[in-house]
Amino acid sequence: MSNCVFCRIMAKEIPATVVHEDEHTLAFMDIGQVNPGHVLVAVKKHVENIFALEDAQAAAVFRSVARVARAIRGAFEPQGLSVYQANGAAAGQTVLHLHVHLVPRYEGDGMALTWPVKNPPREKLAEYAEKIKARLQ
Ligand SMILES: [Zn+2]
Image (tube, rainbow, N blue to C red; front, side):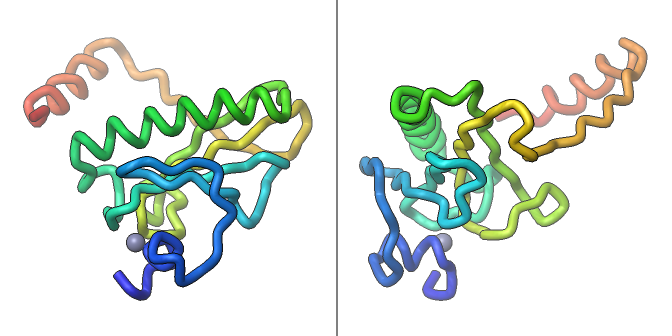
């Protein structure tokens, strides 16, 4: 997609600072750098979100995520590392080309994710699980 910024990076129409590349993925420095060492792992072939991801792409994405995460840990020795992947505007996705953020983390670094737990009864968990299991492929 020519109007997709990540497709333009894949086509080398826009420069990126690449740290890793394989058949299905490209890992490059996030231009925003929440913390030093913040990397994006994106699929090479345009896929908008996780729902359209092929199995081979999915495997490649998480293999690259794990490899780059270990390299970030070795290079920056952060106190932690957040892996963040969003699908859809409601989830915070702003670039509609599947990508995963790897963010080195430190106590008090200002990055926040609220986690408003609802703690439903176990019967509800079973009900939710059945809905998901009925649609697994
Ligand atoms: Zn794209």
